[in-house]
Image 1: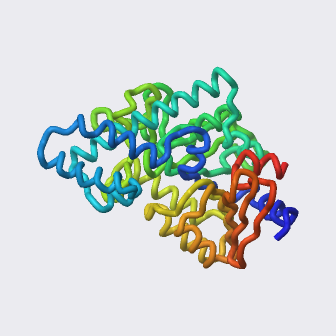
Image 2: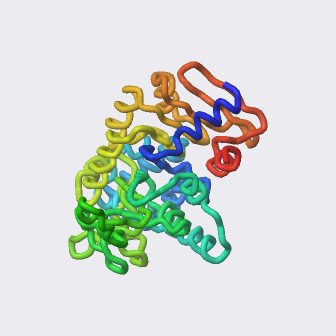
Image 3: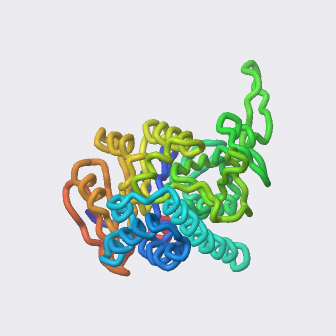
Length: 343
């Protein structure tokens, strides 16, 4: 597959009907800590937060796996945290990711940092409410990228300072006028808006008096997020996670195509629907630093899936069901470089 053919494949995805799925790889590229750094932060902070023998014993089992180099997700599947240890993990995770999120936000505001997702959005003709983005990330980089491009973001909350969770009303928040159509009645007009679905939660989401709200400046450690491990499947069936997960799966089923950015295919909340659609023949473009074993297996099984990944800092690998192609001197796996090369 030559570069011109690959460019044509890529450009065919930038159209209406494409759902974008974003994993941690995109945030990592912007400076949000990944799983390895998060594991180290937990190893530093968690021991001082524990007092009971049972919790200390559970954490020691977790820490032993981390010391051996076992990944955080696998470690938290091997040893199920107690309720208190899990709460400590959630607090440390939210604060650690939140501090990085705030630094990036200030870099955008003060120094004009251009986020990769902002460049990405500029390649779509977003009118009214015709684009959906699904992310498993807690950070708010997608929200920043949208608003810097003058695109509104619907996360199913309504309000500015203390936004209530109103999934059936939120879409009307972005109505900017009414168009009178001769003989057809009136039609609502909307600002360019992206529906952003976050089935694992967000740093801005908080439970206040048992009611979910979106509040930008509330203490990070109290964020509603689902941390890695076995318990995330239990938490995924509570408000607001359940609605976001359900809506995400509806959008996956409805989509014509997918662009999948920095996502490792390791989450059952989404993949029951996503894998079924890909195996059914829907086209997907995967952009990632490294293909996970799950992603690699899926690419081999699905004839309409093309994956672009890292070889080194200047070369890329294109993988599909027919095999692999190495592109020399171009790192198409990086969203910034991919956009620059194709447009």
